[in-house]
Image 1: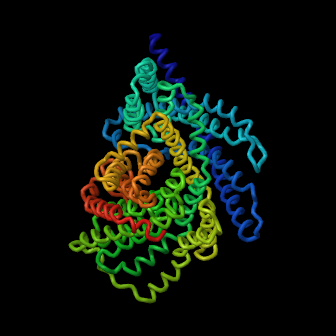
Image 2 (image 1 turned 90 degrees about the vertical axis):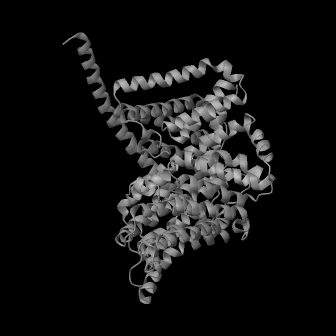
Image 3 (image 1 turned 135 degrees about the horizontal axis):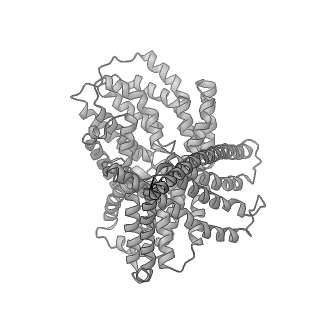
Length: 626
């Protein structure tokens, strides 16, 4: 064997050994962070519910519950972000990389992982500086240094970089790894050498970092949260003299908003609803009521999504709770598989404004002065308008295809299924009542729903699989980490755009659009349909909400009305092919080929656009009951 061949063999053996070691270490880290994250979800639920009981039942509020919950929430978010990295749970756009050959796709995936590693490494030094600042800050009721809370950012960043690196060793060969490092290094070096030019470009540098760099990173599959983060840090480091610790501060403020504590609790609630059979009994009642008419199961699907959707915080979870119950029978009645996935996707877009929606909670947390309770009230009618528009299309499409040739259910069956479903159907009213009557805050009400759902599963429906609790807790912490990372980095990015003067330019540009607030709404609709498709909606709301809502208010558009327009437009983009990832998620859950749905979905998308225009034109639909 030649010396070169022997050297190559030695390197190959070393890489195989490194891969085995990486698998073991990755597994160990995964088990640890999943366990800690699951424990933190349970702890948060107990703390928040204890606050409700002590205040409302015993009239003796526990003053430290909110601060302790906020303290633990940052740790939960960071451990959740690590879990999401391991499970591939961070939001990313995969449309473009699916078009390239497998070898190129794998190489781009390696580059994307390296970008994640570069970002979290960039976080470490400014995070350490931020820790020094916060060390002297004492938490008011817990009487400990804020350092113990903020260090979660450093621990999370370190674990994310380690897990991403281990994943690279597990999934790539040495040649691909080296070439990917070289590519990332060339881009980073080029930007560093161009620093004198970038500093003199003014708004042109914004295009380089927040348009070109973001577009490239999103296109090659870098998770959106990390794309926002690396664009922001790179912009500040190369074009300004501002300290990077400000970005860490903004991320901390974005993630640690007390209102966002309801996110993991509502995710937990939605997953419990599916496990305890509440979603199933709701669907059974609707099927007994209208399932016999032509196209009746299409109406059942829409009604079920209206009732179930929005609680879990995950559209995939909402669709997965309904589709397996209805799709087999709908296909037996002759429904085209592509038609089913099209209706499932657009019904998910329709239900984005139905409380308690994760999107509504997020908007209420990032837009100062916007009441989440008002958003909950304002979201019902816009969703109903969209649902009725989809009903019209479903009725029209079912005229020539027999989807309802079944016998009418007896009144006794309808009454029996209603009686069974009634406890589950009361859940949205229980949640709303506890908020309106002051029993619980918008943050705490989710834990009331969790306890209520658990009691229904144990006592009423006798369907509570204790073995599934741990996987549900892990799924909850993973989704929470993914969402919080987006909110944190998007908050930092929005601050950077504001400091650059972009927000003032945006205000003047939007105010100069001829046609007043009607033109402003039209531009908003087009913009958020595009952003919802490219950025999966939620990041776009976190990024542009603080900038656009003050403009809307200045132009005389009610903030709740504007929120409904934004959310519906975002939902259309999220579920519209060919870029909307929600569309492909619906096809995956419905087990249909996207090619069978891509041409059948457009009448439903058209109905959603019409309903959006109606909601935009009639503000009363959003604010009539405030």
